[in-house]
Image (cartoon, rainbow, N blue to C red; front, side):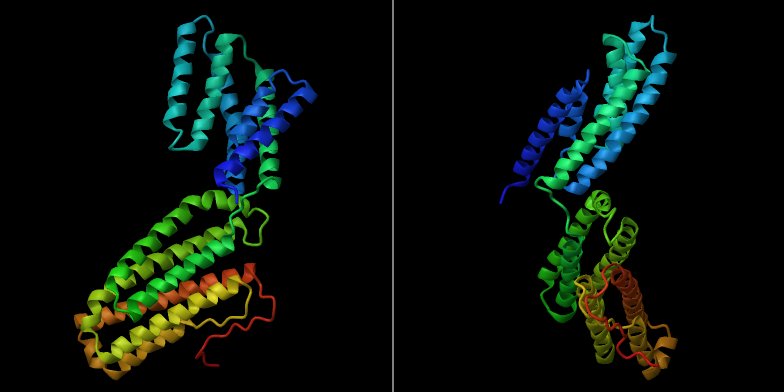
Length: 349
């Protein structure tokens, strides 16, 4: 197996070779822009390469047009002013490099405009050539990234693995006594989701022609984020609330946790296009109704322990409602290979 850095180096070499052949064949005056763009847009993943290509071409056009208009507006007999503007473009290019890649490309193009203006001449024809060459370089980079050592994100495996870890956190807290392991697992779950969110922008570009399109992915990501925060809050609150629950209440909470685990397993099965059953959130709410019916006076008195139990059960109900929404979305994107039996356990009628 080749390392990611090795693949990137080989992709860059192939992209540069193709760009040079295009430059020589077309006899372009400033074909080095094609080569530089093809090399710069080589990325670790296909999605990141697509993202960078759109940003590069778009911001090159926008930055070039604004920079050109600014150049023609500034008096050309004031070289000091031209140099000052050029240095400002350099400053903001470096300043925004780690903050916002889009702005960095914008200011970089403005720098190129004033650099060529100071060294020789700049006009609208050169801007058109710059945009055209950048677009060709982007197409070359995309082609190389697609057909040579392509590294695409397997969204299904990524989210299935994350859901399995979420299920493990619930099982550790509600069905084991290992509190030390619970704390580490909960932190790892939160850290992993932050990494998924960080990579989400580039992943969306990979899903342009995928069954799980960018809109569905964005919606699903928001649902999983809500579930993540809810699970972490539940695990933290249950640690101190457990000692104040009655045996019947504790049994109801454990049943709600078990139902949640089963529903997460149903989501994973649905991702893999297998037949699965999803338990209705109304079943979790029914557990709370039964507890209130057994001792209505306790809940009517607004006792703190009773309110704590009520809050936990309500959160479990809402959690399973959101899981149900995610289940419906996944089922639409990944229809089962066989007839899917999707019925709620315990549903009446």
